[in-house]
Image 1 (cartoon, one colour):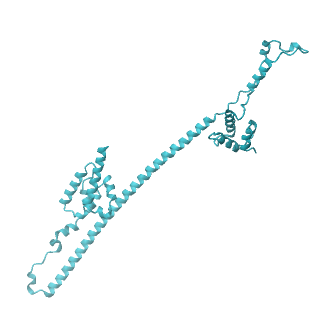
Image 2 (cartoon, rainbow, N blue to C red):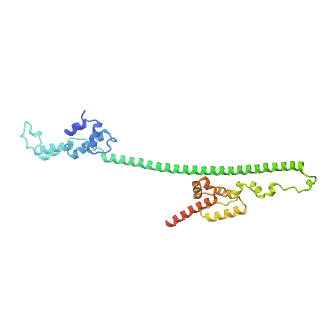
Image 3 (cartoon, rainbow, N blue to C red):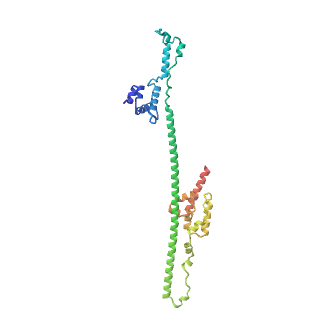
Length: 308
């Protein structure tokens, strides 16, 4: 099998035409031709021969038309032979020679240009690259949407968990107060029956614990779900007015201060909800800190818009 070194040492058209495609690919790479692997063997051989003819490594091929023209030119330039046995059969004048018809030949073969194959290959690669970039952009957008949705679900789950925990704490506190109140009443009745003087019935009975401490009754009757329904809708264009309305409502209904931030979390949305999610659990239960962080974030957004 002919190698690349042997071809370069003694290049010839016959050796190149008898080479395998692997040797032609090595020769094309040596000559600087691109896209050799994507080309057919016949097209690759033609491109290599044309490149070697252009570089002057092998002489250009002589076509049949050129060969006929050379033969005709040589015949015209040769001197007239002496007449033979039958001089009437030979043409004697240039006009008679021109009347002789030329042999019919096949049209010249025009091989496909390697530049057209390379351009189509580059166009296909460009389309693949554009499709890949589009797919990657869509995938990044989808991943971003999924992460935002997960954060929103986590925040909703955490808020519901806090609400449920608050309700359970209130129920437990109410149960403890009821238990302590009933125990005091039972012990007081036993003491009255055992140690009271005869005129103890005339003494005034002390009011229950609920009547002595009305704040405890209001605390037990506090319903977080109803409070959330009373809070106005949060709008990012009216942040200051929202906090003012929220504070007036909470003060008018005498809501416990420790549940203000919890009720507030259920109404926030947009940038305020993202800022709320970035706080720790301890800081998110502090209403003043939540209010300060949300207002500062929207002030920064307004300043950035003004600077732009």
